[in-house]
Image 1 (tube, rainbow, N blue to C red):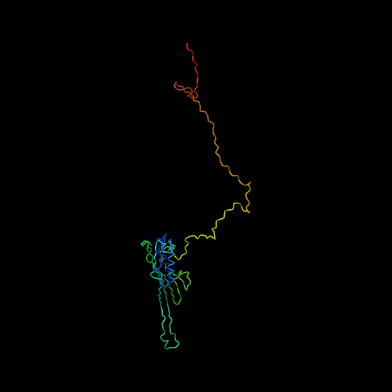
Image 2 (cartoon, rainbow, N blue to C red; image 1 turned 180 degrees about the vertical axis):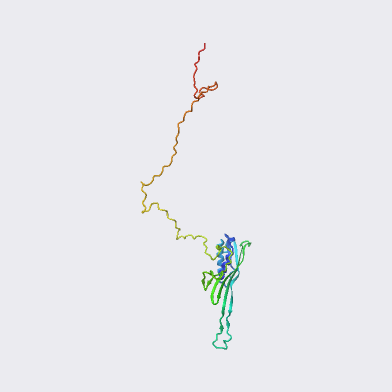
Length: 283
């Protein structure tokens, strides 16, 4: 239950505001002496979620630009029981009657056992060189629940956030008679740390080079013979531009030739007759 509550509480923290920054995670306020497996699980879940949100984690504080400090306010479990019936008691007559049972077992008409796993976590970041605050997440407190119920001696009917639906004696019911408990996750499912996510494709190693697709065969296979040359259609010749030049027709003669003036030289008007007048000798 503690691991389930840790996953849900850390998934509510949005580290995307620190995406692309060199970050060092300070965990000295989570780890106590002796170190428990729950503390290591919370630290590893924090690192996983920060990397998934785009943070560049550094192993040394000197290599980082920001220091992200995490703390936990509560890591633990709680348990309570509710009984309708006769609880287990001590038999007061066991001392007077030898062989009488010393304890009277409980006689439940209905019984319920409720357990909780609580995790409270908070994170804040500041600049490593200047000490100026950059971001804080606020506190995230989540309680995982598990309830076992017995009715007239039949059970347990199991439900809670750590179960995948309602179960009866460990087996999931097809039609659960009891209502389901909804998870209190406020983020999108793609940031849920308990889901499988592939962020990038795995590059092939040097021993296993990447396979390139084979080139298509240039020759026809044996079972399909090539097309005969006689059946093949000849390629069409490229089109050429042929110019057809028509003969130039002479312009029609004018019906009446213009009379040249004294200023117009002979032959200026096409089609006009040119005559030479002989000079007469004087006297």
